[in-house]
Length: 532
Ligand SMILES: Cc1cc2nc3c(=O)[nH]c(=O)nc-3n(C[C@H](O)[C@H](O)[C@H](O)COP(=O)(O)OP(=O)(O)OC[C@H]3O[C@@H](n4cnc5c(N)ncnc54)[C@H](O)[C@@H]3O)c2cc1C
Image (cartoon, rainbow, N blue to C red; front, side, top):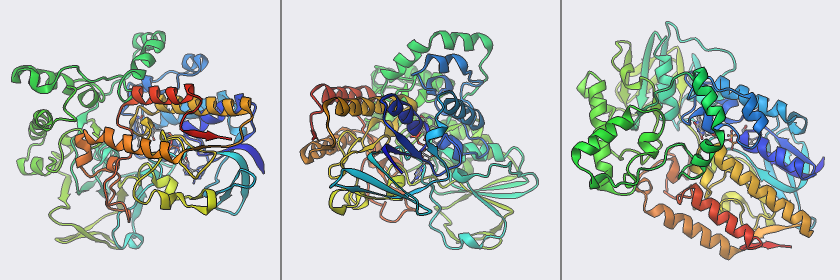
């Protein structure tokens, strides 16, 4: 089948792009690997899965009707509610009729003779379009640990990102969880409430901060609904489009007492305020970062009764905020339970998954259930899993082997008419996502409209624009302490071959600067792109 546009993925990005493309009068089909919409919120059904963004800042802002018809029940809503929200979006805008579910794209290739992209699905079906929009997700390619024996385990085994649709019971069971990232922190806290015995296998402890979730009462709900324009405007102007924006002061410009009081206040407040609304220099100045890191270290010691265990749960290889901060609701207290044990993999690495459980260099642990909370091949992983070939058969995977090269994170030289919505090098890589998704989708839609009006058939960035942007992304990131740390933000994943070298995945200049740059490019007639 041939359409004007093919979109890969029916998460929030793909759904909104579909809605906008239709308004241009273009024909479109969306291919989605899952059997429902919602992307992240469709796949990640693990216990405890919920927002770290305030729910009321996360929903789409483009439709007053949608804002009017939807109520969030909690300040940080759980996954089932967010999935219901995604389904409401699909129903309200009648999106499903252009989405082909259970359809994983395995390859996409550009034919320069007729300016067409051909995609091939896992089952061999083929489809063509003039434009290809990737909405494949920043965290949608799950990774398993690189440990032998995974297939040998005889009990139940689950990856958090491909969690079953039916409830999983942990009651009276011996459960092993591998991983201590943001997902694991949520899952461990929830599993610990009902588990028989829980063992957590930790390689890298993270600095976790309290979420402070609560339900939204009727008065607050009414206030939120009345204030959506202000809420979205505030997000729009903040660095990561969260409701929290950095404090104008530097950490060391205030007295010790004032600093401590400020950290205490942030620690007692909901959401990412302690990360995003902290002193402006804590993520760029080591001495400033040391002060908040020391504060967080003391908090762990206060909350975990056993000092040895507290030590193991305290990061030693990175400062607070230089990796994704997990938000928690009683995570540290889990380790005060008699039926919970921590295995520090820095001391005793896992050697093998066995039929009965997990074998480290020191012992073998027997389990009824193993939970792999081992995360994703982030940002570029979903691209790498598709054989994408541009002009002359060039593979995207090869072009990005040493790290991504893009212009605005939205296009790649040599891959005409392919638009990458939440790919590397745009502000969406680290953002309160729907805010950045709306910006990117609207920018792409305006570009398509411009091409239709002017009769252009092809768009591609110049090599010079791509080089300059890629350099700019790296220069902007250089000041961040995060670039000195291995994490998915720096493209390092020890479970994925070839992902051991640091690069920088996100545009670190912040969403407002990114938007300004994109607007400038458009206003200058899409400067840096070749339109023909
Ligand atoms: C557990 C978890 C919690 C999160 N919490 C927050 C939060 O609080 N705030 C926030 O801003 N962000 C959060 N995120 C990030 C989240 O991914 C984004 O908020 C948002 O959902 C991204 O939407 P998307 O449409 O770009 O990508 P996704 O939601 O990942 O959707 C991508 C879709 O593309 C499909 N796809 C991928 N490859 C193919 C292929 N080859 N063929 C066919 N289909 C394909 C996938 O199946 C998926 O449905 C969280 C992510 C996770 C994993």
